[in-house]
Length: 590
Image 1: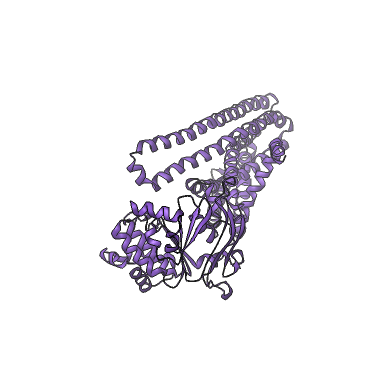
Image 2: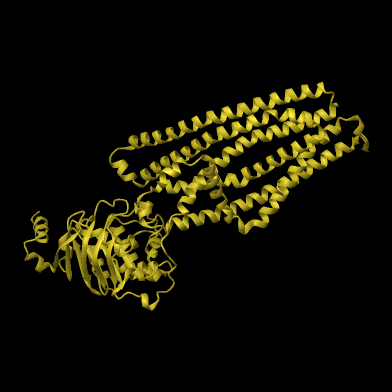
């Protein structure tokens, strides 16, 4: 019922709601309000000064107002020069103030959006693509930059000129003013009519550009796959299709903007011709008629300019809606980890109690059903089973990337939700199969586990991870740049950097997610040796397809289709005629 009501709602309330959303952005202007207010004052003064120009120009050609102030210069001429200089000075400082306020405001907005974005739960990122989110922070905020710097000032200036100009014209000649304004309602109706279409197309273009950016993001991130499958031209065609869609939509919107501008121009010049004809007919003096025509031009130009301002405001409203959609998403309850409170320090005991789970985006597909097990402090526990059994889901639940839909996860007998999220995660470390390295140096990647680590601590961690040997061979050592996603390092080297990162973090609970499955024999031996050192003295959960790596585990939990089917040591499970033995026979027979 709610959806039906919303869909049937009339357009004006929706526009008002969008405008209210846009005004929410002014909270970011609040710290700079004195500068912004001063800029508005300068804008008001320069706009009012502009209103004096037509009157002074009329006086300039009026023989009755030609008294000499200086030799060869009458009073109107001197005042015109003074007004123009004053207007230029005020405009200069207004622009500086608006630009300064805008840059500071948008820097704060970017920081706010990014800070909120990075705190959002994993379910949000499952439903979004990286390119789309990047576009929100870049292109949408760039649209707002134009709004705060130019569009808002233009809107205020033009409204002052229209209102002030009409008042002056009414004082000069009410009859001729009414005649001139006869065309205005038609132009205003056209503005509302065309503006509705312009807004729709502008929003569509923004969405399609974001989709095109997603293609760029994905192909650059997966450039190795693109090259390996010789799909360069496939990706070129995919990007061409997205950008052509955006171009077609933009051109379609351009037709409406063009038709609107043409209509406004026709109305303005038609009105001017009619005003001059009518003014001559009623015998208006030349100087007064000149001033009247100039005011009419000012008003007409401002009305025409409002069309462009209106279009830009529609774009800004669309961009604001996208940004506020992100800011309105509920974030995780995170806080900086300076020190872990004694009551929140983990001893390393883990308990799953009747855990059931499905991903938020797929409520009809159950991933875990009534899973219960215990892991004691300093115990090495292996999770094995076929793909899709739920092994990696256990890792996500432990890190509270997701919460179970049923049951409880306990750490040292306390519910996981009773621990502050940041403090809980800071005591765990994950060494994944597909290691992600940032594009900086080896030192920066190792120090990600402890940002304030010293060189000596990083070197010690690298030695324990069997990484120091190859790091030393690089001319720059720890200062070697690893490239995008660590592309300049081999798989085994990336894995050992990730282990060094975990060593530096010194976690109480260590999670190894198939950390050696993608390595050759020599690299696997080095990585496995580093992992064995890392697992000493801490609770370790090992997810592995290669059963040879988990034979020495204190306990092996066998999962299948979201349920625990077997549990025990390697020798105990081999003695059973079950799934573990089947998997073991398949691997070792091959």
